[in-house]
Image (cartoon, rainbow, N blue to C red; front, side, top):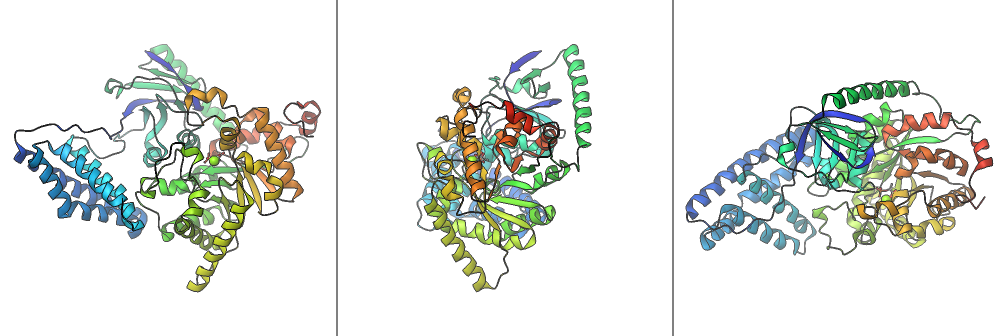
Length: 555
Ligand code: PEP
Ligand code: MG
């Protein structure tokens, strides 16, 4: 039996077979060949296989996402069939007497660079498509199957690290647990695991080799441990613990339908954080009072090109209709930092967390923003949608957003398209926004405090960097004081304030947030019922008497 310790992202126990997930992007060396003709033949065969795969993907996407969703595979097919691509591969194989892999990799790089340098925004986006095609060909040439996980039964997924765009594309039904060798607790990959409500560990230092594939594993999310090839005693003990977990989960189900009200009668709203339509079921099963944060950027991360207005409209409308009269807060795209989309064609940044991220992309590339706003305004006819803007730092940004919103409404009027009147709020996730929250509160309908970024920016501790995890302390008095200040400023202006960062789900702070007067906590679906239990057992007035002045010196 091998035992590794890591940082726990989400509790719970998983027992199952291990699957080692490998990144497919490897540098390709210029390996020489004596038989260029044979290499050319290998390339042609690989191209035929790729075309077949693309046809299959086109049909699947057509059924699942309609013509718009399937169009990308048609584009890939056309690129692959284009003579220029094949000719470039041929020139490199014969000219340099090298293997097909190298010729494909070089051609992919050349074409991607060529597209990336083009004036036209649509053509620039095609750079990511060429890369995708080349990766597909390389995987085929290397004898690998299609990207993604190939398994018939749910598995414990081991990976070196996972990026949000990789995570979001995995088949969630097939994953019992995530375990990564590296990675940070506050990354978006960790957040996705929490949203899925499955045990997950990061930073285990696990040496990933193929030998682990297929071995039995046990992940104890609570203790932060993974057992590989467990002995009989561990297997029996953990099996029992898993049964107990299930019993506890059943007990929590009895809290469904109850109000979130403390022993002394104070209420608070409990909403769910989700990434896409796929998470709606979990939100409803866990009795969410609404959606407090739909991270719309995942809709972008799942694709190889910009989602169209129609695609977005369909998604937002589905969420609104499914939630009925319950509120749905949709955050406009928060791309940037660790959430990178190749097709945005962004310049490489030295410090992306402080770079062109979220609202900064929207304000500097308003076409992208307008498309999303049109979809949101149209969808708001079908339910209780509110729009939330991320990474705000100034009142000036709100004025710029307002101007774009007015233009979008005019566009919809001109098209004769119906739209609603969604509430508009902002995230308070930069120290600047928190410090001027009195001014910002006059401009918007609501606040939601993003403690993940607020902690990062306030404590100067990169949420992605596991080396500073111990300094990334969301319980730091500076963070808590600022939250209290934001709540007071919001209430003074008569607007409501929630917390949608991960701190909202911390049961150790539930009493504190109630005492501060936070109106809403938006958390991963699996955290809703445990929080309800904590709220039902809390007496806020009693707690206020003993509350630490260090945390809340402002009262
Ligand atoms: C936050 O920063 O707290 C937040 C909710 O946004 P994200 O984690 O997506 O950056
Ligand atoms: Mg954030």
